[in-house]
Length: 91
Image (cartoon, rainbow, N blue to C red; front, side, top):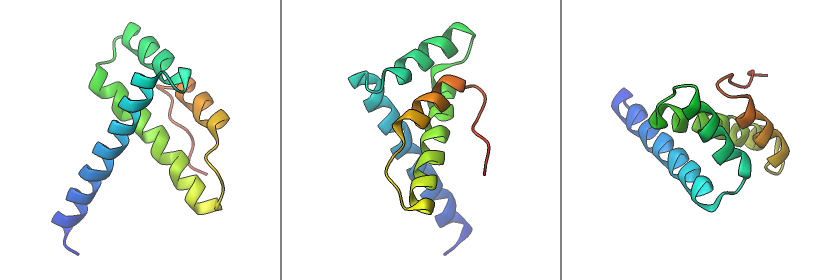
């Protein structure tokens, strides 16, 4: 696989995650998604930046799910969203 394929794959993954965040915002589920968007907008973040931060949190939880072979942890996810712009620690 070339470096070009990797960056295309990363862009696709990011787009997919951002679409998932957009869906959460539209459905207002979890409520922490919209609360986080509103909070970060108030402190001056651009929408695109906020979506990228939220996508990083979602990617972190999906990675942990796959690594630990467990279900999605909604409580952790909502807590991590509410902690933004501070990103979750890599463990």
